[in-house]
Length: 306
Image (tube, rainbow, N blue to C red; front, side, top):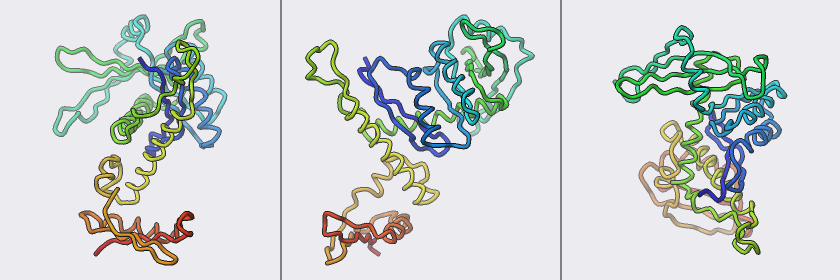
C-alpha cells in the first residue's frame, strides 16, 4: 500500500528533471497534472511545450478535459495523454473500419529482428457529458503481434495537430522518464526516503503529513541525477547517458592526496584507468577558481597523476 508518493516532471528531450512534488498516498497523477504543467509554463517559460502524460492523468473524463482545457488556455501548449482502456471505449475503437488504419514499419526489438508493423488511425472521442462538437482528437495505435498473442492497442488523446506517427513518437519519449526513475531507485536509493507521515500524530488513524523531508529527498535525487547527466555530457560522447552507478564506479570517491598550501588546497588523484576523460572537466573546474569558505577561503585545485 503506497502511503506517500513522489511526482516528478521531466524534460524527455534533454533527459533532466524539472520539478518534484510530494503528496499523500491518496493523491494521483490526475490531481497534479494541471498544476505541475502550469509550474513548467510559469517558471520554465518555454516557447513551446508538449506535455505528455500516462493514463493516470486521465482516469476520468473530467481529468482528460482538465488537461485539454489547459492547452486551450495556453497557445504554446499541446497535450498528449494515453487513454485508459475502458471496455466500452475499446469496443468502439476496435470497430473502426480497417481502411482508416495506415501501416508503418519500424525496426525490431533487437539486431536482425524482423520489422515491427504498427497501424495508426485517427478518430474522435466524445467524453462523458459532452457533445460531438467537443469531441477529442484520438490516435489509435494497433501494434501487430505475430503468433497466437493478441495485438496491442494504444489509444492516445491529443490536442496536437501533428501527424499520428509524430504524436506516437512524442509519447514514447516517456520511456526516458521511466528510466530516470529506475536510476533514482537503484542508483540513488530513492526508496530510502524518510517517511512522509508524522508517526507522533495524536490520531494514528489520521496521521499528519509532513511534506518537507520527503520532498527534499526527492529534490536531491533529481539534482544529483541532473548533475551526473551534465558530467557525462562534459566527459565526452563515450559517457553521454551513462548511469550514475557507472560514473560512481569510474570517477567518484577516487583515492588521492590532499596538499594544503597557504592559499590553495591541492587535490592530487592517484592514477586510475580512464582518467584522461576527466582532463577537460578538471581544466574547466580549475578555471572557475572555486574556494572553500570553511577552510580560510582556500582555492581548490584538482590535479591528475601522470
